[in-house]
Length: 204
Image (cartoon, rainbow, N blue to C red; front, side):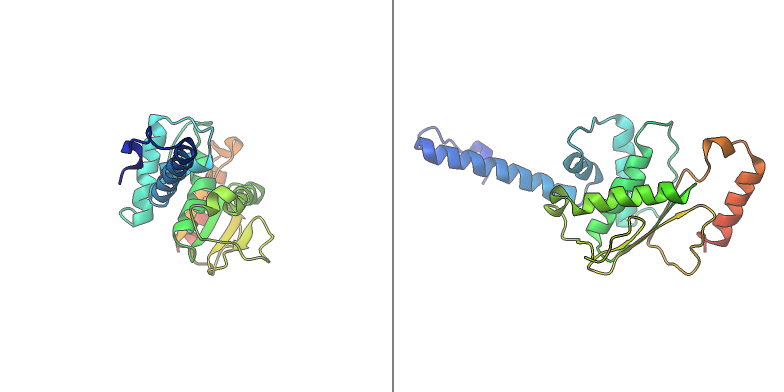
């Protein structure tokens, strides 16, 4: 039954009021269910002030394919301030570990401090009431570190800076966000160090 097509005008006022409340709850539940399998719907649930652009839809489509295994490698190149890091380093890991609470995630960026900051934001998101209305994933009670936390179901999140040791750690989802600082973008030695780190660690 489509609750939006039911004629309630002849019902008593108190019944109409309850019915309208049920309509709102039903609409919210539909959105939450869609958010489980559609990244952009998840973003809209978690980020009420989000303003959607065509590039967001394109990235979200790729993230959906990443989640289903249709693609297993993705490079995102975008100008600054276009939501790349917010999407890829905060919302994506939270969404992916919501879909699979046993997921193992490694998050890296050009400094360990920035990687930990992303971990803190993802962790805060998972702890939020809005998130918990969508997913059953819960953090372990003893997971306090922003850059190293675990889910109650056995998932893991590990944040590290480029050049940091991640040998011996497995990852179902590896995120490398801005492996170079702006200052190092034209520094051949810095680029080479990053490449050596990638080939000797993450790519393994």
